[in-house]
Image: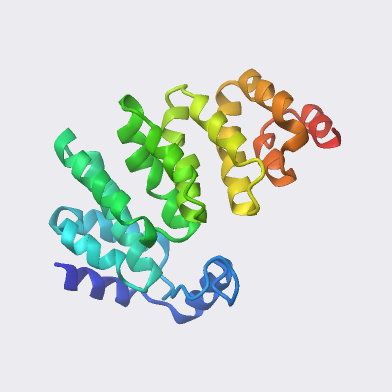
Length: 232
């Protein structure tokens, strides 16, 4: 089935789109996605194939997809993994999480992180010790650090904000704007549910917060309040 899936993906390849996508994901020399290979498949096309193949693709098959140089193959593998996790029992979920953590080097761009981490690792940790997120946060590796904070989306959706606040505070001095954006995004998600909780965090950390993180965090606020934070 893996051969069929790969061929189906290749059938959707669009060279012109691949060029545009490679630029969008910063694959040039010295950029965060340097060397990544795109073949121009859209996310809706991938999702349609995931629905068709997820039941017949094994973890060994997913490993081969994650090992592939083609970005969309890795994306497809992660999307299948998400689908399998959502349908799995607790024992199988543990196996999938272990597999996910063992493949962190393959999850090497922001879309690969964002499509998978909170749906797998975040959901799994809802009723468990969360130290693994702090270990990931201290990895000094951009994508692993992003997995740590974006995984808190699962907690935020359950009204649990503490880990996001702690991790966002940890990343206030991070040098990369992709981490500022990730933290700001999670903080904005908190603000949509409890603006007062977000404001308390901002009052404590505003003077140290990168501008990008702040802009993302306050994006949904009333305009006057938002402008007030930006002026401060």
